Length: 631
Image: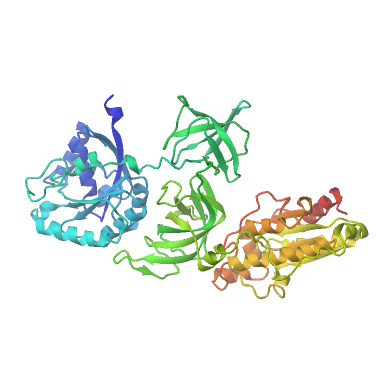
């Protein structure tokens, strides 16, 4: 009964290679009597065979054969042990520089980190790098264990010099609780028992600090976040939503909202394998049932109605690059955030951090273990909190879609803001449509309805959206020909043609792209009101811009046509050589290469040009208009 009341501490050990991390953990296991007799006998026998004077407790952790041969830790080794006062889960993470990515994995869920520093070698670059990563990961508590004090004759002077050096460095980091402890993991000094060899040290032992450090306040129990992993429907009478609670608490009867749909309802029950719960909290895995039928799928998130996360497809983050292949701005990645996977780009590196000086450096690329602040754009909005507020919804990884390698781990700092964003945010939001000053709208001289009677067909807008090279223009031109031959009044607005005149002053930044679509939408409206069937073919990569255009027209007169095509096929087609220019860096912020494309969620028509012929697609769209009696 007593053990059930013990609190749990997750902690990680980091440091440079051969600083004694595995030995320290082995010592903790030994001192807390967490080693079986046959395990100890085995490592004792191995130590004698290798000619060691002491039993090498590190052998308990170095489980991989490669580690045993080289004497270093490669993988992250997780161990469980407990003392009379507390339970522990510990991650022994690699110290060698090329395995920094494994260190991030081990530290990502830790409440406390131990950085070991070899008393003989002092503070090294890797010691600083691990300090920065622990700071960025917002690990609340940090112990700097100055190890191998036995090799420097337990010198107080050596210890104080190391403490002074690391304290000066850590002043620049976001670390609020840091303690220094001189230890000898090999001999056991100040690990579980006070050392007689260092009477000048009057602080706590390492184990005592681990047993008494306060960690419950580190949990976020306010912001309820429940990413959906799976929809469970074993029969028609039960529909539940499975997932792990990232933060916050929930009880039956509480009002919730489902994102991104925005639908609201209340929690009916909290179901587990052992029965229903009256309350659930992190990190429990549960099934929620709701009192209303709502369409929910994997990647959606359930939150409280008055406590919402941020929503954006453009944010800034601190990342640690974890791939041997360097990062370049032209690549696309898969961003895995909670249970959601979305295509992502890194359009800009804001700065790289020099791990020795913490100075910010300008760069366009990142190499293995580089730490940097970057801008990230995603193909669809992400539901997140800043990492400082919520580690669960503020963290993510980037995956290379070709190799499936995890290339970076990131911590979200907030929505990306440029000077243009600030200026735009200061504008009067009540103005929904631009107009020149001192002008008055006088209405249409001849109504659209009258024009439709004369034309003998309804006015409509076909909005073709998709990647460059997907075949939009080819389809649009053939649709116009078919409609014109059928006696319809038509107008074709093509992206390239529009940029030769009306939008010739615009570039391809996000802001210019939005202005381009705004102008096109207003022009399409003029032709629509003249009774024409307007065919628009534009990449129009951003959902909000397409939604703005849609709002200009009656609901039943606007047809969004998603012209789908695999991006690799579009690159091979490359009719105007634009992908080649974008990949070489000649064109910046090109959709599909260095800027995202947000796929339509509920388009009226979806066609796939890499699977269907242009003739079949045109016939299908024209037939749709006929069936709906547009002509």
